[in-house]
Structures are given as structure tokens and as C-alpha cells.
Amino acid sequence: MRVFGEAPYENKRVLSQVCFIKESQKYPNYFRVNDVRKLCPDIFPNWDQPFADQLLNDFRLPLKRDKEAISRHCLRVPHSNVSVEV
Image (cartoon, rainbow, N blue to C red):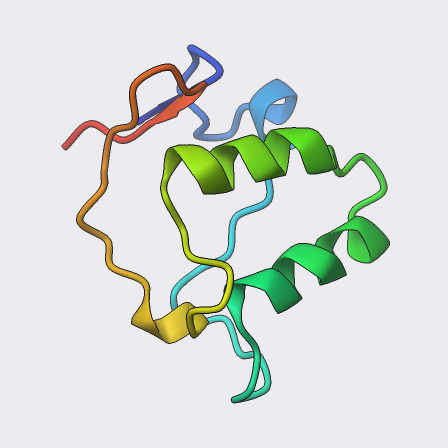
């Protein structure tokens, strides 16, 4: 996996610029993708909402869908700074 063109493992420069939300992250049952989107700027001081919105668009994440219902089928997105290579 490369993030911002670099391997993120133990990479402070990369990790200081990302927010990883693992699959098992617990949110209230009623939370949708948009609820998580609204919460992040209050939690992460360097949150870049325009960039987050661009990633949501690049990955085609529907804002009204349950977090648990999001498919993991899209692993690489053209023109994005984030890619997953397996």
C-alpha cells in the first residue's frame, strides 16, 4: 500500500496526515457515512474537509449508507493520492 507516494508503515510524515477507520470501529447503530464525515473535523485538528470530500467522491461512498454496509470492492482509485495494492 502507498499513501502520498510512500509506504505508511511507521512513517510519521504519512501517518500524521491520515485518519484510519477500521472495520471494527464502533459507532452508534444509526450512524451513516455522513455522520462520521461530520464528526471528524471536531476530533482531528488537521482535518482537511475538501480532501476528505474528494476521497469520498473518488471512492464513490454514499453518504447515507450505513458504515457497515460499505463494500470493499474498490481498492484502487485513479487520480487519488491513496491506493491499495494487494
